[in-house]
Image (cartoon, rainbow over all chains, first blue to last red; front, side):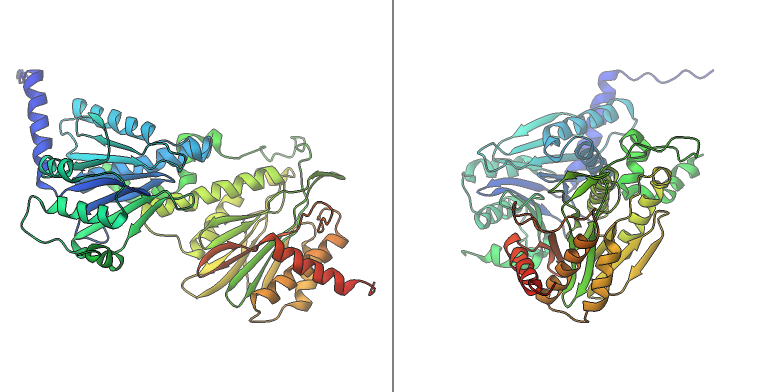
Length: 230
Length: 269
């Protein structure tokens, strides 16, 4: 009878974490920035059909980096969670916090129990109402670690450098145009390439909108915003 | 074994359906009442009585509904809303038992939004109409015991570039109407008026006037349909669905049009 291999739990977790981190660092990055009327999400994504940023519910958006099939599964699970909850209680009872917790549980379970961890990081963003409440940005890592972020968040390939850049350059009360330009500059920090509207996927949670706050900004509409005050 | 695992992804085409999701995970949330067996006593009376209608016009479809719900010979509610936005380009007018009808409208709204979010694009108008037919069929057991739900579904079809109207029977049968339709206890009377007054290619103002005239006639002939309540300022609700979306005709506009129709009748009857 062959003896099963012994691997120490510590080593196993280390290996899994390294594997997941490697997968994520190969991908392109996403930034989220609070601006005057809500939250802006900017992703480097040349595809116009495969989205990294999407709508979950009235005030909640989702963004994922890493392996597409994995974060797509998580996204659909989130839409299901939100729609079920909203249907059985009321639309106002669907919160980003509950959803972020669910993602954290799911990713944590997968990380400890499955052979292969998910190579993803996700953002759950909830825009506040106009009553002065705060926006909420949650970042959930491949192992279920959950962090709540203020003002801005970054994830993906070179997230650390992008975060450093945003820390130095972010200020409160940005207009949409300023926030977008800052976000794009942040994404370019780690590369020499100039990003144009065709390399970007941009969406906002706009609190001035009725009910469903999520809105994509198509490339045609991006160009004037990017060139704005140059 | 592994084959079955990946093939399930393709078999599960209902992935983007909210109704299928609820059926699978929490069936107690679905509005299924009664078993439909003839031995079972009929369910107690629930609020009924309606006239809802839809008329095609130049830019799309106009939908109107009265505001009254009745329970037997009593008025159960004076301000009930019977025309609901299903999504940006379609609306549903409910007729039948109020409770199950409203629940179906809510479920249908969630169904459309869920599909849109999961798939990243809208269902076609045809697809929406078929989906609603399936939901009405689900209600058949309750319908046999008296809780009938027979909505009107209307919307703007981006493919044909015009409005379309669908009516249903209790078995979930789906029939398309090309010009107008009215449903509910006063539906027949409203249809009579629409038949005489409908013209092709009407403007919004003309369509509004025709629809309100049909509502007035239905309210006169049918005890289940509420007329304009001048004392409380309650008028039929009117919505329009065009290329630019689902819109509401403001109360003032409906009031003015109603008053014009009533004034024209004064001294004539």
